[in-house]
Length: 208
Image 1 (cartoon, rainbow, N blue to C red):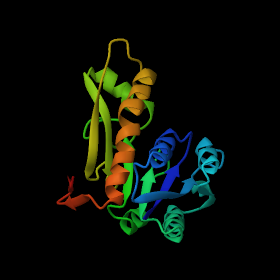
Image 2: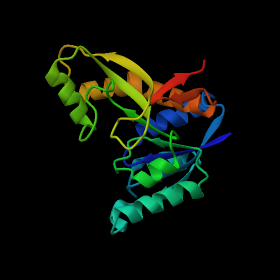
Image 3: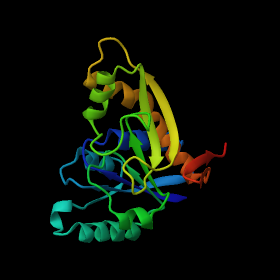
């Protein structure tokens, strides 16, 4: 049984999707053992506590140097015996130390079909604003491993979502969450916990 530690900053809708999937027995080989927030007031912490999951808080502002924060987060995750780290709306940049300590063991969910609308500055509503501005007909979400390149790690799963006439960034954001993010993030976590993801030459192979 693998220990899953989820990093959050806000409302925790993706965390809730993971908790719901766990309750349905869809993450059979893993368990969410801790939720760590960069924001002590994040509603995601309430979601965790309501489900009997241990919580912790680590704020970037409490560390003068980024390297100190990077080292502290790495040590915190190691103290929780994290086998897998999941970024579920975590709004603080990860440093090299934590990425290297958990190589191919950090999963992020991005609200677009990478390599479209990704990289530095592409998060939250901006992703959907840019997709609508470009006039693409299909968008979606990507679950991927985290490396030192922003949104550049090996892709695990992707799911497409159609853009509809009259979409606003807010409407599109909700549809992408409901139809893609909340489906592929728990699936990617389950596959990892079942040792069904092989990373080779910067790409993943899924063993079904």
